[in-house]
Structures are given as C-alpha cells and as structure tokens.
Amino acid sequence: MIVNSKELLETAKKNKIAIPQFNINNLEWAKYILEECNLNNSPVIIGVSQKTVEYMGGYKVVSSLIKELDSEMKLKIPVVIHLDHGKNFEECKNAIDSGFTSVMIDTSSLPLDENIEETKKVVEYAEKYTVTVEAEIGSIGNNVNLYTNLEEAIKFVKETNIDSLAPAIGSVHGIYKEKILLDIDLCQKISKETNLPLVLHGGSGIDELNLKDVVNAGISKININTELQIVWANAVKKYLIENGTEYDPRKIISSGEKEIKRVIKEKIDILINKTKI
Ligand code: 13P
Image (cartoon, rainbow, N blue to C red; front, top):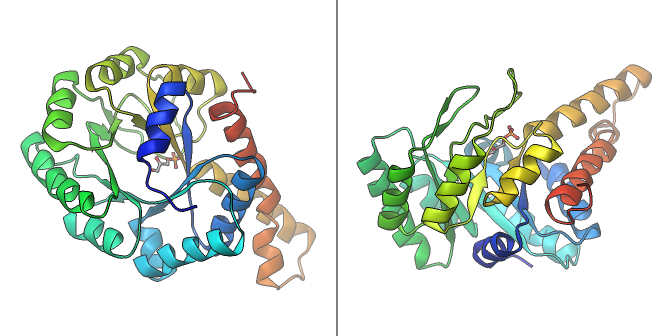
C-alpha cells in the first residue's frame, strides 16, 4: 500500500523504532527492497535522489514503477515514495505532481531565514496533496558536519510546519573516514523541544549500538544508501571474476541481490524488530 510517511513516523516515534529508508538506483533495487521488506513485514521508505530520478527517466517513471510493483507484488506493507534531498521548490513540486507521497526539501545550505521560506513554500504546496515534508537544518555533508543549533531547530520547526526534521548530529553521507561520533545528547534535546520525528541521514556503516542509541534519542527514520551499493558491487565483482564469460545483464545485476537482501534484513532486525540488540 502506497502511503505518505506521517502515520508511520509518528507511530515509530511513539514506539521507539525507526522506519528504514533504502535508496534505489534502478528497477532491480526497488524490487529487491520491496520483496525483502514485504517478506519481513517491515514498512519501507523508498528514497530516490534527484540524480536517480534523472538516471531512471523522470519522476513519473519512478513513481509509476513503485506503484506498479506494489500492485503486481500484492505488497502487504506500507510503502512511501520519497524524494531524497530535493534541492528547491520546483523539484519538490515535480515529485508531488508525479505522485511521490513524501519529499525532502534540502535548502539547508541557505541562511536560516531563506531555508525557512523555501521550506514553507514546499509545505504549503505538499499539504494540498497530503504529501509529507522532511527538511534539514545544519549540514550533513560528506565527511563534513555542521551540527544543528538547537534554538535554530526550534524556530525552524515552529515556522515551517514540516512533518519530520533531519538534524546534523555527526553522521555523514558515504563511507566514514573517521570514528563515528554521534551527538546523542543534542539529538535528544532536539527531539524533546521540537516533538517531531527525527531523521538520521548517512545511516550506512553505523553499528548496532549507535543505531540503538539514536533511535532511543528520537530518530524515527534512518536513511541507508552507500552500504547497499558497496555489498552489491562487491558481490557483482566476485561474480564476474568467477564467471568471466557471462554477458547476460540480468544474471550480472542479480548476482548482488542476495547481499542487498542480507543487509536489508539485518537493518530491519535492528530498527523495526529490535531483535538484534
Ligand atoms: P548513506 O549513503 O551514507 O547511507 O546515506 C544515505 C542518505 O542519507 C540518503 O539521504
């Protein structure tokens, strides 16, 4: 069932669990993610970056693809179609007009007042279509992190009326080059003061204990991309070394399926079932 993220994230917040967002790259990834989440009875947020939208042929293609898979596969889980890091109002509007059920507006590099203005515009538009809006404050970079200021976060949430907030608490996108140091205390304070479901970006490579701590501190959604790409790429490389004459793309691409699904199951056990900890 295709839904927005409102109820999912609010329930997750209440129950101190986190809904996984897995980013897709192509049809196969969407299929693997949906199959494994459905098998494990886990709600899922399908994250699609602007670059992936372009790569896959546009917003309508992506949105129709997920909707058709949902229908063909007779999924019994809630599925959110989410734009990851929408750069401006126009991109978010495109996603909404094409049937995405959730968008992230990321104008966090702008001065606070401009970030508020751009985010408000998206919220006002999204409301008409019951699409949920996530926004970022502070800067979650690629191994650069500008931690969120608590007072600014409070002002931002109050003035924008967003549904979920991505604070910068020490996680980074991509591979961690240094020891992961998450500011759990800051996360807790932002959660308490804003009373919104919080989102952790850069979820790849974060160990179980850190994941457990952030979820207990108010994180209700965790974004994972790089980790799936790495295990998939390693599996495909191994397959090609062992099967040097293979040329069927279906076989080559799906040689990474098992590994993607293994990591998805592992994350579900930590974030949803809490059986790992
Ligand atoms: P990773 O690629 O580090 O998992 O981050 C994903 C993410 O935050 C997408 O918004």
